[in-house]
Image (tube, rainbow, N blue to C red):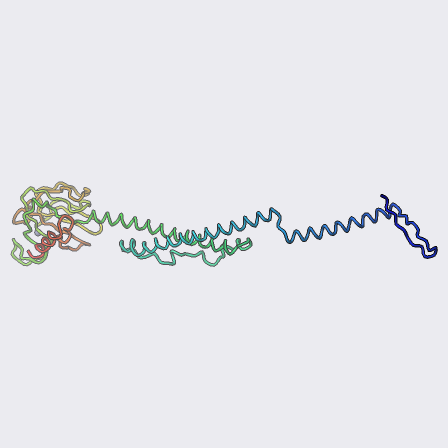
Length: 317
Ligand SMILES: [Zn+2]
C-alpha cells in the first residue's frame, strides 16, 4: 500500500498532499540505513568488549592449562632439587669422608653465572616471572648435577687408588703358616746373635726349613735380586705408595729386577746365605725409606688373635 504524507498550508488553510522527489526519497532511505548501521556498530563493539569469541575462550582455557602445567613442573623441579640435596649431603658426609676427600665447597656446587642477567630475553613474555624462576631453578639443578657427577668421578679414582694400594701393601707373611717355625728375632734393638753386640734389627727373622717357599707379600715390581753383603741372596720388592719389602738369606732367587710380582707369588726359597746362624728369612718392610715393624702389616692372613700374638712376639724377641 502506498503511503501518502500531507502538509497543512497556512495561507490556503488546506491539507495538501506532499510529493517527494526521487532524490529526497533516496536520501531518507540512506538516513535510516546509516542509523541502523550505527546502532549495529555500537552493539558489536559492546559485544566485543564484554563477550569472548569461541577462539578467545579456547585460548583462555589453554592458558589456564599451561599455567597449571607450569605449576606441576615447578613442583617437580623442587622435588628433584631435594633429591639432589640429599645426594650432595651423602656425598660430602659419607662417600668423600670415607676416602678422606674434602667436601665440595658450596660455592662450587652452586656456581653462578655472575653479573649478567641471563634471563633478560624472557622479561617481555607473559608470565615472565614464572618462566624466569623456573629457568633459574633448572639452571641451578644442572650446575649442581655437574658438580655432583664430577665428585663421583673423583671418588671412582680414589676407590681405584685405594684398591690398588690395598693389593700392593705388604700385608701377608712371606712364609706359609705350615712352613713357619716361629720368629727367632723380632724388630728393634737386640743383641746380635753372631756379633754379640747391641744392634738395631731392621726386620724380623722367620724360621723355616731350607728350601721352603718365600712369597711376595704384596703386588709390586722387583727392585733388586742378588747378593747383598750380610743379607746374602736378597730380594727387594717396590710396592709403590712408598712401600718396599726385603727378603734376605735366600737359598734360591726365582725373580729378576723388573719382574712384576703378585701377592702370594713364590719369589725364592729359605736359606742361610750371608750372615745367618740358621735357615730363616730376614724380612723387612720399609715405609718412605724408613724401617718399620713388618709384623704390623700381617693383618691380612691372620685372625685378630694370631695377629696380636705375632705382633707381641715380633716386638719382644
Ligand atoms: Zn734378621
